[in-house]
Length: 120
Length: 120
Image (cartoon, rainbow over all chains, first blue to last red; front, side, top):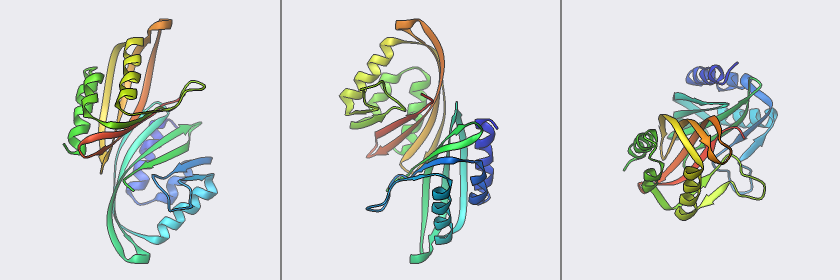
């Protein structure tokens, strides 16, 4: 798949809340970078097992009321989308709106890098 | 100015090749991050003087045949655009097409961070 095809697939799946399914587009060597991390933890998750574990933690700790995905913007091997989420962080029953930009890099038809930009 | 207003201004000025003018939108404390750097050099330029120097080097070493700017995608304090450039690197008379994503962060009505994503 081209960068554009993968980007469209990410938008389609994530718009439907199918975040786990979107991971079928990831390389085993995916590197995932958050904007920030709790003290003592890393912003970076390396490898599909670590990235899936991060995603599963997120999914089981948040209730998603709505998700809107905009884009993609495509440039060469990279693409960018925005996520606008209305979620509740379940451990604290805290409802919040989050807006972030995701930047992705594609190599050999798989996503090899993702980075998220939001205010921390 | 809001994130959206600054983003629209960046798109407008850069589409016209007015890269220097776009720098009026930058904070004195701007941090600019490239996707890569030559051996021994830093990916990061810190402060408006360093960032202007980088931009002036770029402008005087490249002839811009065309520039297309797409976007913006806006999420909170961040926005993303793409640059599609047809340029000649003058020292080597080497013409090339470049595609990159720029991600920007806005604080207090000024751009405080920019990062570029392209294949190096």
